[in-house]
Length: 332
Ligand code: NAD
Ligand code: UDP
Image (spheres, rainbow, N blue to C red):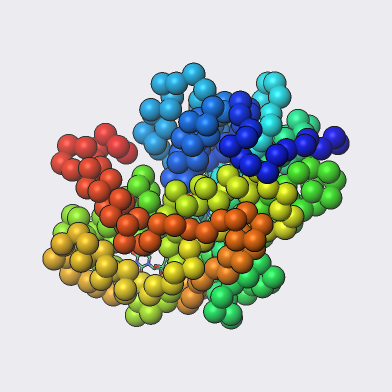
């Protein structure tokens, strides 16, 4: 398989033909916007399981964006050459990926294999949106790529965690066959256009605060997460795709917050007088999560720039608009 020579600087490559799976989802739609803005042609493949056409509606008006409704667990043929494949297809919110665990697992494994075959046929470079969930419920405070993880193979999160781990294996096996693979281990990312109903903590708390519902803290709220603003993540993904990085690269914001701290911050920033209630902690919920981003700094010259307060303020502004009376139905 001939390897294409690529410059390091992503902005130096224009007019690429790109397949983006999961492009109607939260992260995918931000990435699609950026790629189209840079002058590339984007073929977006999505089954709309958790994504929304509204996320890409403005892009669909333009000539460089095409939407294909397709499930990546089924083989996919694309006419013409492809330079890159970005595989973001997979529900990311725990209640949503647990709603059909077998499909989630097949999306990770069969879906990745289908796309890797396409990469092998076309010579496209392929990037996998992997996850900090490959570390499971970590026994180390700071998770570096060298940490092998602590994952339950049979719990309710396994369809996603083990699916993503198996997908990484597939990526590196195809890498050994000559396919150019990149793997991003993404930590919790938030921002405008998360679905208000998708059940993740940021979208839940912001929606609850803005609509006067009680904020639901699972367990004591002492578990931690590190929240990365979506624009920072997209910048990291772009740099990773353009790089020569071998092996997985963590992309996340090392700022670590307890879930209770997040609830307090959302209440303060929205000016909401919503109550806070406790709900049972879901099984296997990781107690802590914080990325070591040394590799991303060294290999990509990347680190996040948007502090949580600023990112939340942009997210709250977009949620306010989307949840305004009369707008809610239209956005779903
Ligand atoms: P999302 O649920 O908003 O988007 C996922 C998209 O994939 C949706 O548009 C959905 O319809 C589509 N999809 C799901 N299964 C599919 C299938 N079988 N075939 C075709 N399309 C399918 O989630 P997101 O937050 O945008 O996450 C995007 C990717 O990044 C996912 O792969 C996720 O695992 C990964 N990731 C996200 C985070 C995060 O915090 N946002 C963290 C770690 C990893
Ligand atoms: N969480 C919470 N209330 C909610 C939703 C989630 O306390 O309404 C907690 C959840 O138990 C977890 C953390 O917030 O400890 C992050 O959850 P999320 O679903 O956003 O992502 P993940 O668990 O995959 O990191």
